[in-house]
Image (cartoon, rainbow over all chains, first blue to last red; front, side, top):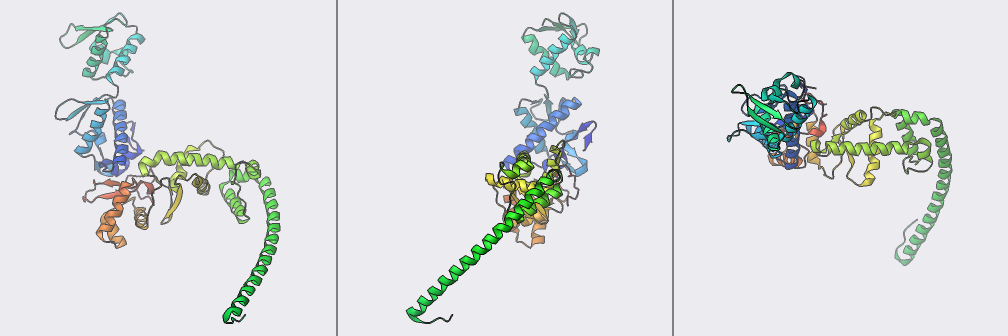
Length: 179
Length: 251
């Protein structure tokens, strides 16, 4: 089985026709489904948050079979993820796509869990601490995209679970939990 | 008997026919009686054999296949009913039933990929993977038997031959001769091009495109526009194994 780093690629990735957008509806549906799943799983495993459509994203081509996804195909698969609520275009030109292998609400739940696990209920911490501190190492929060984290935190703030405030340094914010 | 013209002639012919018919019936009855007796002896010998070799029949696919052939020769179908002597003695009624269920499951789960047509070889391989822990090994012959039982369900399960291979069809799609020939051609590399079909089968261009488009619509083919020479390839998942792509020769 082929691998990309540590990631095991599914069999369809080695079958040339899957790199061409299929014209027949049922076949296309199956194709889109497979690609959606692959993209999500790969991003989750490699902690990829942003995919640039015109960049060399490893899944977009398979050198072993000399095939690459056309721009149209890339747009089709990512748009399908956007429709599912599992991705968002970050620009009007649809050149970059944010992949939400966890939805914002799921990230929020993970943060709550993290806080409880580490006894931070009445504590204060910083946004950077949450995404790169020692406690977050080994958890899914480690290395999380900053904008995604902020959105999840804002969601929780809206529910009254925490307060975000300006921190000591200009580029980091503090968070006080009140779960 | 010489035919004579006129009514008299006709009456004679009728009488002669009747006599022959009666004679024929007698002969047939005699033969049947003899055969019944022979069969009855044969059957009880077969039953003894089955009792004695129960384990071998269960565990050994080759042995099992030969046993079935013997049964067929004397008109015994051990799978005819799930109850009754044979099923109870051998317990193989359940075996084929279970196999049938697994086959249906595999066909359904691969349908989106191969359009409802899967090679017997691939089916057996997937079955083997699924049955890793089971006591009984499964051979292609067992698959064929289980599938013939499935046909009774009328769900379109059928085994078709394409070239040297056997394919299992689990959808009602009818394949005509043109489609069959294309599938056979595709077995070499897993795909064909319009040019290749026209050239190898000496078809006019419309005929090749029509057949390929139908196969595409039925979900049996997938297009591939990524080759360097710019020629569209039509791939057929049913003639390849899911785990052996990457341009490998599948034959």
